[in-house]
Image 1: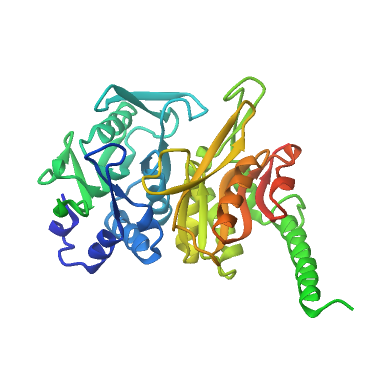
Image 2: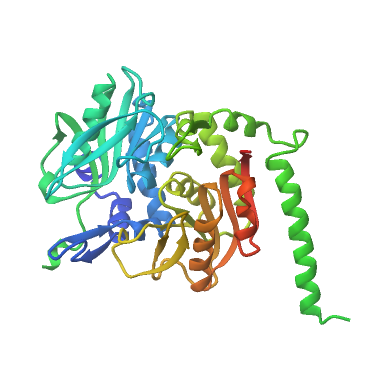
Amino acid sequence: MFAAENGLKGDPRLEAISAAIRVVPDFPKKGIMFQDITTLLLDHKAFKHTIDIFVDRYKDMHISVVAGVEARGFMFGPSIALAIGAKFVPLRKPGKLPGKVISESYELEYGHDRLEMHVDAVEPRERVIIIDDLVATGGTLSAAISLMESQGAEVVECACVIGLPEVKGQHKLEGKPLYVLVEPSGLDEF
Amino acid sequence: SLPKSLNKRESERKTADFFIFRSSLTMSGNKQEEDPRINGIKTKIRVVPDFPKKGIMFQDITTVLLDPKAFKDTIDLFVERYRDKNISVVAGIEARGFLFGPPIALAIGAKFVPLRKPKKLPGETIFEEYELEYGNDRLEMHVGAVEAGDRALVVDDLIATGGTLCAAINLLERVGAEVVECACVIELPELKGRQRLKGKPLCMLVEYR
């Protein structure tokens, strides 16, 4: 669900966050309006608002793990984890994590990719938030949820800065709640 | 006698050298002055033998991230050092620099700029090549992210040969930023990366020999 529908309607921070996101047409290929969060990271106030909104939401939910999807999930997840006193767990592309891993595959438009996690990172019954910059089809987040559940952990919510139209109206992803701050910028222009 | 401007630079350099020396002592190495938080961080780093290939003792910081206190201490140590230095940009090197850079940037009021492998950044980029053991790789930065006059900190989890950090320094200097310091959690001093930083100082927390 979108933050504006869940207690933050009219919150000026959401507008500042949305305004700070840059749209890059035709990246990585023609027809895609890429939502570039690097400009959000350049705006200290808006970046701080982003983190604060997630921290305010999760700080009293007894979350013990924040898992971030490589690589843009790494830009948001650790700051949230630090502020709420949780572990941070990186979910990575194959071959990057040095220790023993478990992996889950997910579909791309053409072909598959895999997401890996260290086996000792998450324990049974831990309460987990999964973070990424953007949710489109939800394929990557679904793989992340599977990784957590395979270790007996409970995914409390998936959280993303941006949610594409495919997820509008969806409150859940694979049965898990989905929390999104803003819709994509710039889609109205076309 | 030297012109006033040269004198000022000379005395600044001497002050900077002294500060670095003292800071190296306080950050790591000299047990009497070592911040008590350093040992807690050091014990959380996991060494994984033969990764990514035989003979390499890989320094795994994911275990530091699993300990909220050790992770917080890591960030706090850097924030305490940089908060009053008017740093306007923290540049983090993909991907493990993204784990430490943004929390530091947020705490000290700076922009965060990701320095990425080729073709990841969507906008117009500039790149710098650097050497790998076999062949080269490239580091990219968005045009316009960093401006002339920005005071920059470069962050990565570890410094080995210093090749990547040197590429990062080059990118920042090409757009007119001043690289104030490089900050890494871990240094592998035997690889002498510290000497490849174009004279820029290095701050690290933990040495691995």
